[in-house]
Amino acid sequence: MQLAQLKQRACVEDIDLRSRRGRDRAQLASLASCDWIRAVHNLIVHGPTGSGKTYLACALANQACRQRLSALYLRAPRLFEDLSLCHADGSFRKRLGALAKTRLLLIDDFAIAPIGPRERSDLLEVLDDRVGTRSTIITSQLPIEHWHDYIGDPTLADAILDRLLHSAHNIHLEGESMRKPLPTQIKNPIPKPRKIDST
Image (cartoon, rainbow, N blue to C red; front, top):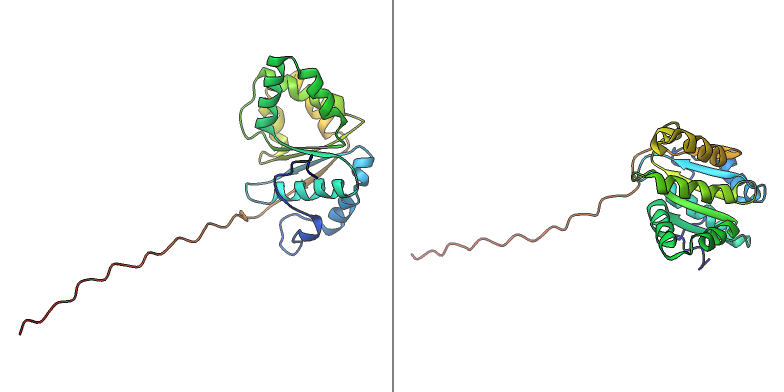
């Protein structure tokens, strides 16, 4: 659990299935068994901001850890930044090897920021090492049908999506943001000075 570095302390037992957000009880029960990880399938969780993507993904990664399957949480921008630093100091292959050993890699906030040629190439390397051997969870606000255009390079986009979407489970979450605004603090008004009757 420590090595997983999950962003949220979430567990499948706490997922609210009463609200209509696209969560299916039978599908969640199937995913909670972690058999999809043992079968080397991927999972795509997409939907608007605040719909619970990260919480659901972290809950499933938590469940994997509880079943002694290694997991690792990374936000996509930080993953690309980390790999860029690894290119600079010569540890890129070593980092790829470490990622390839993790049974469940959770890449959060995919397509939240533009990517360039280096990021596209690095993502392909990460996924190529995992295809057929390890499972990956991707969360994104961007609908899957727009991912090809987001990646940009048609050849790399085809290769990345083929490795990612093949044998992938798909969850589309809906609804308004669950992040409730903080209540505004009401300051006590300064009392007006009372008029003094001089008579």
